[in-house]
Amino acid sequence: MQLSKHLFAGLLSLLVLTSCGSEKSAESAQPSIPKLVVFITIDEWRGDLPIRFQKHYRHGLKTFTDNSIWFTDAIVDHAVTATGPGHLTLLSGRHHGSMGILANNFYDKALKRTVYCAEDEGAKILGEDEPGGSYKNIEGSSLGDWMKTTRSESKVFSVSGKDRAAILAAGREADGVYWYQWNTGKFITSTYYTEAYPEYIQAFNDSDYPAQYINEKWIKSQPDSFYEAVTQTPDDYLFERDLSRRTADTETDPHLHHPSFPHEIAAGKTGLSKSYYEGFGFMPWLDEITLKLAATIAKEEKLGQDDTPDLLIVSLSAHDVIFHCTGPESHEEAEVEMTLDNYLAQFMTALETNVPKQDILYVLAADHGGMSLPEYLQEKGIDAHRRGVQAKIFRDSLKTAILNKCQTSDSLFLAFQTLDIYWNDVFAEAHGIQKSAVDQFIRQEALKQDWIAAVYSREQLDDYTHLDSLGMLVAHSWNTRKGADWVIVQAEYNYLSSLPKGTGHGAPYYYDMHVPWLMMGTGLKPQSIRQKVRTIDIAPTLAEILKVTPPNHLDGKSVLSLVRN
Image (cartoon, rainbow, N blue to C red; front, side, top):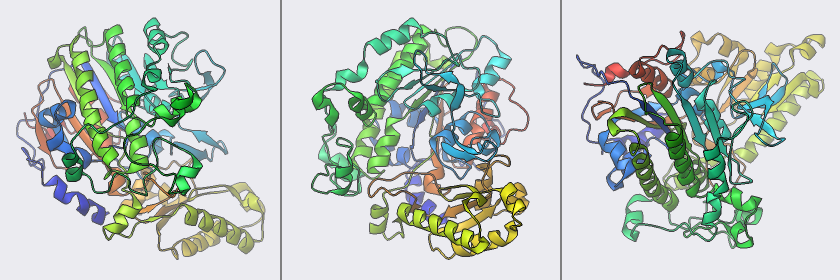
């Protein structure tokens, strides 16, 4: 972890720090209670990105970086650095494992089946006979719920390009939760939240904003000198995935590969279709219309227009897709930073038309970071690899070896998922198979692999008092009832994907854990704080500002005492 953190040390030094952050001020901040909290998440916005682009921002992101309390060393304090767990922890103050959500999709040992983090078998997509989603299965609550407990008139709304992002940040009692439907281009909700769409949501969907981009191209907005200064890879870097023409052929045949600007939605050439609306989600325009809908909700619901604090949650999902395809050193990342800079300025202007700026508390954060393209890292001398195919071969061979050793059938295991192994206790006991012998064999075989860092057993994770720091991160993503019997963790810079291009996240290392956290407004004095904080500290901190009472036994704590008045 230290190696990857070292990569960002030079970037951090570029900041002009107005507060050391490691010393508590004698007079901590006492901000006024905002009438509206606007919580914005940029999906997969790694913590070094705003540092790197800070001097290039001109609009909304410049407003944030110039006028915020900026926690420059915020981390997600868990191993499974993914969208569902990340959004759940941002506003709950809890480790996601303790809330019963182990990943976006995971095998639930208690239910003996694979589940989705935001599923609700009792809910449908409103107006459709398709499965819906909600907060129903979450073992806990969120900031919005605490606000409503303290002041029942508080309103909570959430909107995102992804259902899990909108749902898991919003909490149990949200008034409205909407997400982009990737096959229709509409923003939808489930029957858990309402029995009918408000007229303004229906009107927004009837406008079919995605269709308005059918002949558009995503082009560069800056001079060539800008991209030369801020990017590390050429625009047509071979190991980027193609945003415009997403087919199997373009992933494998370099002659069909077109990762460079300008980008367009190839499916649009044949008219509006499911493929077109899916392709729309790979362009920054999805984030633009997400913010447009959020501003519409704020206006129509009169958020922040009385003395009872309201909460508006917005998660921007297109950034995640672009990062996945092109990586953080790409021309696309540089351009999307400038694009979001503009979009956020427009969004804040729209909000402040109806709510005075001094009555709004803005929070800007991310659910997780992400890894640079492995091939780029290799060029920089870092031992980085794509291990998806190798991981599958290892997993299959390990399973076969264990079954041969025990002379038994597949029934010994409930599931093998990624590098998580689920033991069938009932079957093993009935056949006299000792788990301790298998435990030793798994460790022995796994640690022969140079791309595997550690193995943690159920027994270790249950009694975590003797875990090392990596094991503690795993424990924060694990659950006694639902979790695996063995969790195998890849080594740093080993990306578990079988795709030959692009990149992602999901590992317990600094590049995936480091995220921005900025807060602006309601009397908070702009300053940079270098002391390490965690995303589970965000909700308790906001609760203190809002003067609402969070539940007992949170994993996070308020860090408002670090902020100088």
